[in-house]
Length: 488
Image 1 (spheres, rainbow, N blue to C red):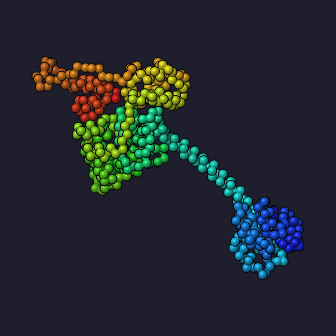
Image 2 (image 1 turned 60 degrees about the vertical axis):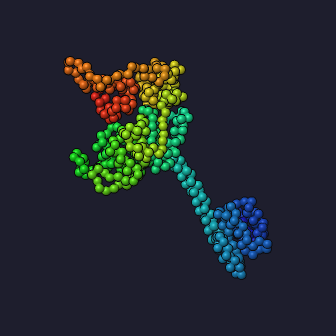
Image 3 (image 1 turned 120 degrees about the horizontal axis):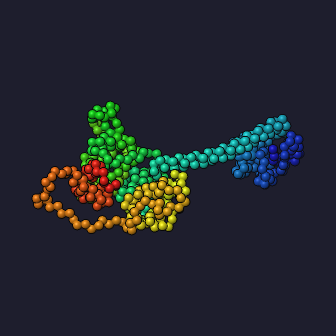
């Protein structure tokens, strides 16, 4: 251990210095405080042994200077003093001195104090070493934890279908930014509009999860898939004994399950009118009743809706409540069809090709020029979903480094299909109908009309229902029994 010995009394300094040297310490001697401060600043001394009473700079002043220096934490200062300066020694202890010795110095006491300093310095070094070690370990563990969280988020995102949004156009970049902004305020309902297959649910999940930094639930309901009675119990839940066939203990609804998170209402235009009024109350009052219940239940749910038809037209037709429409249409996102974003077709196809090729362990890595031209010529009425399905089918059926045109099972139309001009069917309902003499099936004739209307509208059930003057639910019921309907 290096010791800086400071004393203006040369005889005492030499005597103490020789004794410490014999004990095995490295001793540097200074005759005054100024010289000692300069020597200390130029080197590292775990221990300073200094007299208090010295000309120009006292031992106490030297202590103050040392304790204000950067290396003060790793330097112990021991003072020696006569009886007349005991109060100064005590004040020095308050200022951070390690200990003090009385003059004349008792060598046995000097040995004890020096050993205490050596032990203290050893503990400081060990503590410093352990601190550095633990800081390194903590940094390493923190990095490992962050990487694991990132990995788990990616897995969770993959399970939820997040992270597959292709941002390849300015329009999609704006939509992506808008969805991220909506994520920041759960109080804002969002209405997402766009054709079938444009990725409305993916955008809804982007609004909810953002970069998958939340663990709150994302619960979805397809409004076109449930009858009004089933819809009410599915959305609000029901109490025990509310109706025959229900669970004995009752059941929580989707509003309960989505508490603290998001309720995604797909095909909102198909919501039964009686449920629309109850949903409006939930949005306004933030509370609801379960079916058969008498107790109000507080609701903390963000509502995101999606539709592939004009909700405004549904309002004008009286099929959707105007007040609910205005309540839902606070945040708006419109997803353009793929045919309006031709610059996205090839990048999306490449993204899907890489995904399915990796998933199915195939060789595909690129798209040939002829295949790219064929992809661009197709109208993609089913939008991104149709493109994804087409690439998945090709990867499943073939195994080649490059996707070829003949690998694609798509039509070669040159533009979005325009319905051929047809002579309107004039049904003179006010004139007598010429019915056949033989018996015929009315249902079969209606089915033919529905099939023709579906084909006319490219399989779009909402447009077909509007054309025929039916609700989409009625059309879906009838179409489900027709074997030759056009797939949606």
